Length: 212
Image (cartoon, rainbow, N blue to C red; front, top):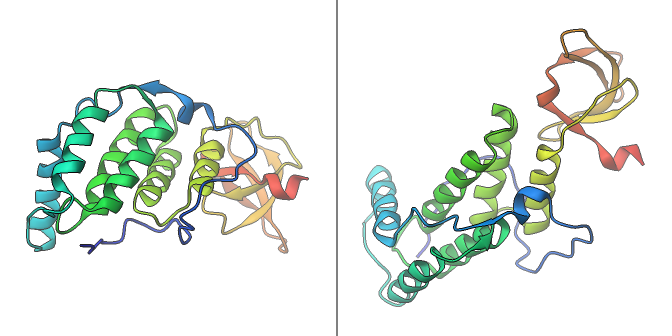
């Protein structure tokens, strides 16, 4: 019953197990509310129908699981859950495949919309990366621990200073800060080079592993 189109570029294979994270979840994921209250099951089916139409796939339900998932959805959407529990529930709905096609994309779209709304205080690039990580978690491309790490890192505010170890949001480059300009931009040097790059602070995040 799967069929999923690619969600984006972030991710590693999903191990399917529970997170062994030792530190606490970041504050955004601990927040509790009725996050799914505005999505009734017909609206979920409408999202799936739109995806099927755009993807030229057959629109329909999986008779083996649809009724049970729809019933649980209506029960859970009016319950208070943490944001992490909500993302876990979206992932479980995807795995149970209530529709014929685009199950992952359907529930990932809801997860992405939630992330964009709830992380609205982040810069555009950080919000985009956070919502992408959530979508990849819902579809099973990114495991839970890595998704939490991404949200945690992107939600952290940084008071940059020379010598701090940093990396690009996608982790493709690592280096250290050389100086902070008066307008707030960061001049930094990637590892193994003599180059000096200038970046907006929201385009970098702390490289915790290399700071130790």
